Length: 387
Ligand SMILES: Cc1ncc(COP(=O)(O)O)c(C=O)c1O
Image (cartoon, rainbow, N blue to C red; front, side, top):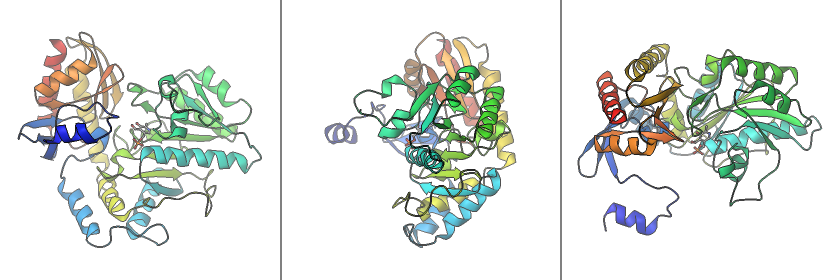
């Protein structure tokens, strides 16, 4: 049996895989088992922040793996403490809880909101989330996800979520001010929901209402975070300071790692015994994350902005393009002549890996993708969209 046959025989297919087995790569080029190269605009769904087999990342990972691969949270760990300090210093947040994935980070954020409410006598807390959002695959994060399609098969779901229309201030403020509402959880650019950017005035007004009403402003930065939109965290485009931030995906550059950043208002809500994780804060992942975060500099953000602008110059008004969306290097294209899935397939046949997000084509390249690969990939895409 080859890999595809073995996978089909033995792996429970919760994903419809692309017919491709990736075995190696370097930077923004990935290679399949037949030695065929592809320009990678997919990066393991925004996880391989600096591409494949990046030298600095590899050194950080292997050095730490050679010292101690895991300690558990019963002991202090230098890579975690150092990373937490960096994340707090650069965001204005006060404390960090480390976990292993985006869904777990959101579960923790939801627990913070519920305990924050309980500490104030609210024992039936409600969290507002946005329609078209995506917050994860655990039962509670599915309930938090504002898309009906995720609310089948796995009920009964936990109560305590209401869904507001994204960028509809009246609807959101009305839901936020309802009885027992303790928090709002939202992505500033909805990723899985189709690359929908929240407007500045909307986010700022929601933040102000949260501050006035003593409610927690919680930003899901699982996909938008760690440099993806051209800032360390995307909330930094909005001039706001959230109370809770969840993140994962690109944080450790391709290793499973997540974090909850906790601001002043919610600091101290989770006390000893209220939350935990065996693998959370794994030193190898934390060492990887330190190597990533250290390279998320203003110089890199300027490069990201330049590449984002080039994307718009190249595709704005181009044949077969109905709409462009996104921010930084989290980008979407609504094709005018074919489905997003067809674009993905035809690009792959021409040596370019791209993704979909609902009806859009989604690009999530490495944050340090070379200009040559970026230009070459966009030319392939332009040709496919026009045909
Ligand atoms: C915004 C957002 N939140 C949460 C998640 C869930 O993350 P994970 O798959 O690491 O659990 C995702 C994954 O796509 C996401 O995009």
